[in-house]
Structures are given as C-alpha cells and as structure tokens.
Amino acid sequence: MNKKLAAALSGGAVLVLALSGCGGDDSSEKLNSWAKEVCDEVQPQAKKIEAANTSIQKQTSDNSTPADVQKTDSQAFQDMSDAYKAIGAAVTKAGAPEVENGEKKKADAVKELNGISTSYADLKKQVDALDTKDQGKFADGLKDIATELDKLGQSGNVALNKLQEGEVGQAMAKQESCKSASGSPSATNG
Image (cartoon, rainbow, N blue to C red):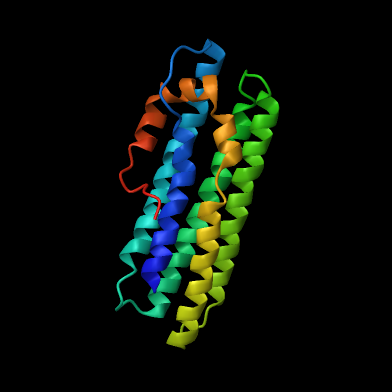
C-alpha cells in the first residue's frame, strides 16, 4: 500500500523542478540577476523535497511498522510544506521579473507555491491523526492520503510554468543553481 504513496509523492518533486527553466538565448541583465536570485534559493529547497521523497520511498517496505511510516511521512510532509513556502518567499523577495505581466506572473506563482505548502501541511495533519495501532485503519488512511497526493501532483503548476515562459525561462536556464536543481534523476512523475 505504501508503494502507492511513494509513487504519488514522487510526482511532487516535479513541481519544484519545474522551476529549473528550459534552454534559451540572451536576456537582460536585470532578468539574469532575478533568475540567479530565485535559482539560488530554489536549489536547497529542491534538495529538501527530493530528500523528503527519498525518505518516504525508503520507508515503503512492507515490513515497516505503521508508527515508522507515520513518523517518516509526517516529517517528509513538513519538510515539503516548508520548502514550498520558502520557494514562495524567494520568488516574493526577488520581486517581479522584468517581463510583460511580470507582477501578475509572480503573484500567481507565489499563491500557487503557498497553496502547495498548505496542502502538504494538511497532509501532515492527516498522517499524524492516523491510528497506528490498527493496521487496517492505518492502511485505509494511507490510501486517502495517497489519493490527496495524487491530486496535488496532478493539479499541475500552471502559474509556475507561466512565470517561467519565454525570457524568464531562458534566464533561469543559464543559472548554475537551476541546472543542478533540474539534474535530479529521481524527479520522475510516478
């Protein structure tokens, strides 16, 4: 059962790694500076999310006790919530990119990131509330959480993608910290 949870979770890492941009050409100096600031802040958060995913996947063996699974999942959801909140704060701090509709794109992306953060915080509350003494109830509870994770993974990252369109994505693609954030092999959508 917990394997489904791990598969649903691995989709979550994709959200952050979407911030790593695509290949591109020249951009203005201000845009490059903005991209560097955001990428430098995103990289440690992307690693935090990847580590949280990895910890959950390690805890998916069938012989893990419900208490172990609960503890690991709870910490992972907290880490993910914190990471998405920090990425939202980084985008806020960097300000709007100097592109058409930059302010709206920034505001939408921050709103989306904060929403994802809240969703992971809610999942942490759900996993903390599960009854670890009853294996059946615990498994049912994990199914519900996996369903929520699936929705979270599929809800997409429309605003993040919009933020990174065109010149912004090109500027981000040039940043070393964004390149290394996107080089993660475990960011497969499960």
